[in-house]
Length: 419
Image (cartoon, rainbow, N blue to C red; front, side):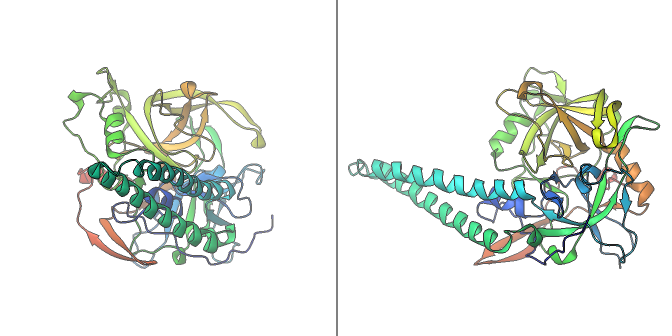
């Protein structure tokens, strides 16, 4: 395969949902977790970035790597030998990766246009209402405020649309790094029988603004307000002692869900039954909520590698319930799944189920996955917790400063992930 040449495009956008306008539309172009990625050579095979890592404790080694699935880094239809790869020196050709493949970019652009069109229709209705509210000053003021707010949002969407289509319209302008490692894919890997399907993307430092880099924070806004998050994650009144809502729509991923926690979950559903609520942000489905259902033996297939209906042990996550849609879909492989507190459960490697009601997502447990990463990169560790970045729009620029904030999980012993 001939590697396409990358072109240095703009850096990933900063993401500060409190200070930035239209944050859910900026998110796909930012470094916040749930980053949609694809190989530059085959940008129609898409996946999602899971977690950021430092690769060494050496202060001179500034490399940052993004975890995802091996079948995202090297899609089986394009790499049929299943030998894996590791980039060990600078002389090896770079297999470039992009933030947003063809489908992801189209969804992001279409989403902006659809939102603007919806707001325009709303403004048309509100203007007709205003013509009938001349005798009701209070209501007239309220509707006028709605029109003004919608107009500002349309202008901001238009500015973002112009910037994106001007500077990121082709995949070569969206490169964010290159393949560093891709494991040979194994189903029922010894000795525990999990699926081994993981890879690392080394980020291009020219594409990252370290002054606003969020680290391992998952965007949970967009489809859900703070109230929607609370309703889904804390549905039972007896389970609200540790009640916590992310004021900036960002959940810090830190700590690891143990096998013991899976066997004895402590969250309570609406009926008071014990369960484990989880969430993720995927390149296709965005923010979704679900329920972890423990370890299950499933049949997995990678037909390009002559792996058909092979037994594998996986963590199962079910759709949250009626009205919440699928937990994952094509293009979400590589998404990291965490609890409502941000503890890391596992990485999405596949899914099954023809309808939302029968939807099941398969995860490789993170407690096992981290050991496999350590075998290949002994000094690797989860990117440290980043204090909240205050990034304020000033015209077309962003000015960043740090602000102290307590992450939801204060257990220092678990915060490091890889130890």
